Image (cartoon, rainbow, N blue to C red; front, top):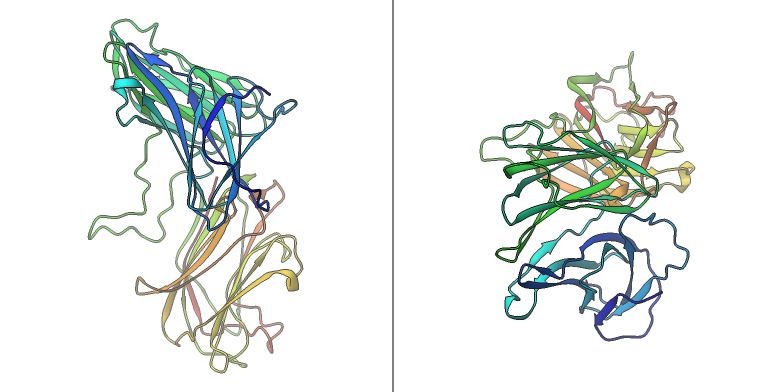
Length: 442
């Protein structure tokens, strides 16, 4: 395969392979804007303590990126703590794919050449955190086209299946600048729509593009001014769905995030009694592949039932049956005094991960349990708080990469134990379970 690259880095000895995460960088293919020359620069930093390899390949615009016949990835070894600079041929537009083990960091810039070098303009680096989900919406603001100014829109299909993307371009007053358009995209492909306002008379400013796709995707705009030689990128905007709060304006723990499949059970959800030791809840989220699930639950600890060292159930969360377990959280009382978290998909009970933390919950006290099971980010965490003060956090990794929910799948939630195996799993008689929230993030 013809090389598109000049690489500013030293070569080092090969090292053992590790799990590779992948990012994508859309390359603008811009050599000049007006009288100003430009080149693309991609910085790759290895923050690990050992030399590792990043593999990269460029995919042409509009092609099916899953078809790899004749496509050879180029390896680049980077020493511990070092940075390498990649310079793709400036005139080549496409999608740069980089794969490396966790611990690599990337940035990309379009930098002026010659006397117009300057600091350059950041280009998007797309990963699982920045991409838009299937059926979601990305909004790009501040678009303008007037005199020497033009705006281009770029859409990237990040899925390994074909996609259909719909774009609405609106003026600042909310009216359509032109009819919405739906465009098919091949798997793992990149489409460039040049000068989108060329047919709009009189120019336009402060417009926005709203893009939705049937698969995971990314969208942004690039703007140029040939009179000044300027190049700018308009990245997807951020929303008001932020967990940050102003002083005195704390959100409720039961507020649902925008765009999630969310179930809220406010107030007292279950009080364990001899007549009604546990509560089972069944949920049926819409069939889809979800990035993560988050749970909030508040538990008032009651008496330690016999035996106190038995597993007093806090939260049991599975898909269908015990074999596919998001979490099993339980507490043990005096004589043992700990919290245990178990999880694991497609595993028997002994195979599941087990994390224990020394912690003696106090009778009559209420604790908040916030659980984030995030296969997309390869993390999970359990935060235990009291009076909004974090007591401790447990972290681990899921053994799946996504949460698949089919039409017949059900999410099963258990609060307390049924008491059928009292010597090992006594019911939490006298305990109270309140303010349950379960969110699935697409």
